[in-house]
Length: 185
Length: 86
Image 1 (cartoon, rainbow over the protein chains, first blue to last red):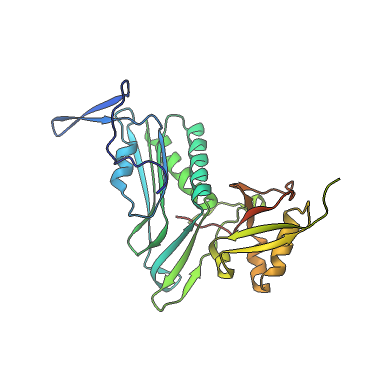
Image 2 (image 1 turned 30 degrees about the vertical axis):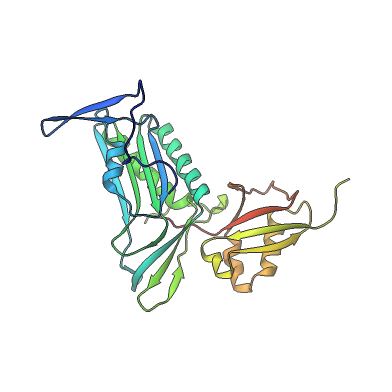
């Protein structure tokens, strides 16, 4: 996996900001990571709770959590698995770019983007985009922008594997500037 | 004076282009542009790969190549077919 993981124990450095929040009557302290953007490509299972924990903060009143799940069917075919081929460095770079674009449009967002690599079975989560903002309008808008841009621009390819043993690479969005268009799916 | 000797490049395949292997070595004329590199790739791949190749981008060191790019040295390129993450 590339990048750091927000669920790992975080050693508090002198001067590092600490959040204190009341949960079930108890005060819980968490380090607030200085970088409000977390991105990664992950071969192990994706964790929506880790995404929520990263973006959740008392400073923000809204959290949007988007997850993409591997479907067990597509175009009348019974899908047994999806295989994700990823260019790791270019994907991470793309995630960072689109996150920076979102923050430029909606300042103050906290953003978590993690995508799966390798084989995933139906029902497994393939992508998580989580966003928090002071208010819901920018949280919804930022989350929508990020997943739409990820699907159009991230160098990730998926191959469907069918129950009868066949496999097929799916069509997608060309990275050639002249061919870029919005995918409504 | 610039050399006119052909330049060796390697092109790494991703996604559906992996049907034709993980990478391919090519010899290309110096100062070849993206279209010329793609033409060399097309000659090395079967005809049914050509429509996919036409819609694929080429990249070098994590940068998508534009029409201004020209080949100046032996290098490794990435052939990136249309993407569909999520």
